[in-house]
Image 1 (cartoon, one colour):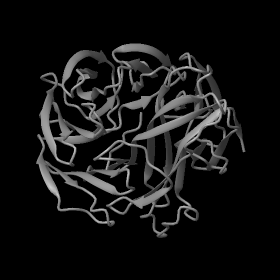
Image 2: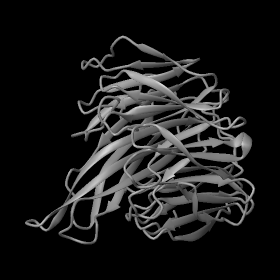
Image 3: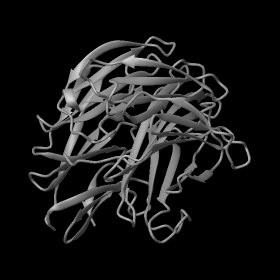
Length: 428
């Protein structure tokens, strides 16, 4: 597995409220490196529902591109999910996630992930499903850097304004939007030693987004609970005496509509899982033993593997050379590409709402695509690369047809694996 160091993390959601966002919004993250545009459809038809499309483009690539329509180093990811098959029922909720990765013109590897909650309500008169959706997180990771300078979190609230939370040293700094394109006076909160990764979500169910920060050196995760006005109260979730959390995610593992906590600890070859008691306090659920690659805060992927109300999490197991997918502390399935896993990415290659995977098998110089169904079963397809040894992989919409393709870079050129929209790939 490749070693990746994280320079900055940016997530686009609301620090004040987790409500739906109307229209189209575009803004540049406060550090000036990435411009993000969010568009969406409010009403779904009975076949395929598109909740949101996110386009991200680097603006520090040497050519100064900020126009999303003209930039040459952009990436687009679209949430796709099918409406429920039955009709005339109570509203139904799905939690979905999608990911895209690309390399900008400056050589920086970027990863954008979108997380949403979609509620379907059946319209008996028009005989269709209507949807209401909430963006619960958009993160932009800058990968392949040699040091961790800071982590940034920006928020897109219901008014279309960005809030900022950033980590620098032992301080969490929060800057709320002033409503006029600027920010209010920064407010700082103390962090324990070794702050590393940041996650966000509504941990206490009050409709306001809270923060979780992994603190490696002090072997804990600090929870910042939003008081509703953008102020935060903190508490600590203590891990084991040797557990140093590099990555942390907030994810509803058990489908009870509150966010649980999952922390990756590569040093002890373990993942610690904590159940949310419903009010933002956490109780240890268990420990999963898995030999994690050290990816500097990008060890855990949040995925939708089986179409139920809960989300799952996935990691690479360096010992078994397989992708392991867990629901809480229960192993649901594994994906074995047949060789050493150099990299994997999760996204939506088709329209069923279940996360799919692309896996770089460096032993056999190939890409293994695993397409999931709503029962949690994955069907693999192997794509051998003959142009040369694989150097890197991107998940992008390469042919502008609104689905995610795979670009495989080698020293001799790039192989384009184009998606037909149903998760079937052919070489261009």
